[in-house]
Image (cartoon, rainbow, N blue to C red):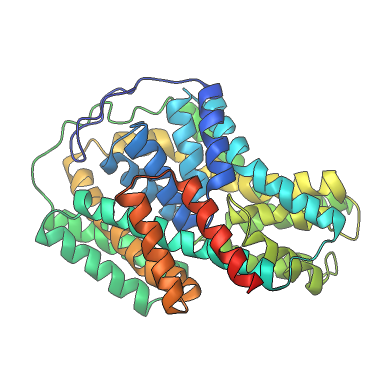
Length: 409
């Protein structure tokens, strides 16, 4: 196990694992991480920061802040970056991405191919139980992160300001504005001791590799539309539609859904009824919501569809976010060695706590806690996680069973 010098201390050079170890850990997360991107960050923190100590609290929050700045699925980008860090390079990142993504992608692909309906009171109860799990997981993450990342009045004030910003300015604009405000406030309020951060995370990514990734991101965004116009290739049109959606969206899976609906339902590639049925099931599966792309690609009316369509759509939607974060890692780590950057990141970390706090209320709490019984179940799950220290997958199973039973009575 790598050592951890504390929530605010330097991480130091980490012990490296292997892509196989990364795959095993993220496969577990891929089959147990219910509740959407905010909840996923809580699962990652519990498994990799608290239990396995792959990195410390501050480093984890810094990584979350970076991924919140970039377009694409933040939880998948964080997982990919952690795989790069632990698995000693790109193979580790790909192992984390594949293991975390494939379980839900396979479920949604099977659903598209079988055209099964996920409806009825039992199914609704099951889904509701998973939403209550998300309440407990997000609350646990905020509880732990707030103690480490908002230890003084200045940073607590930044967190409160972030909550106000995301409440009054909803959507991705509010999140980006809150993080930017936190960074600016940190420059003013958080200029304390300079932490010795040489080799703080030491991502095994060269600057040349980062520049290549950023170049590929731009090339795949700009070139395919012209090739589609010239050739009329439906396969390339499918790739371009999903890649563009993944490259231009901030705020995670729920934000990308309107873009996807415009891309695939408007031209008649997928019916609105089929789109909404797949979206309903996507709420009940673990892993990133972006795996909804596998369902859409498989359900396409024009070819390619089936396995080929699912593969193209899934890779295209997730690829831009992975290229961006991989390209930024070497430059971001060097930037954080500067005192001004450290102060800005302290403020940014506090803002991340505020953003998570606002998300705990809306949409997590408001969509899950509807009755006093829901409140009791969510509170019980929180206590099981924080006091009894049960693994998250056990809590998932307990609340899913409770939700299913409620659908039977």
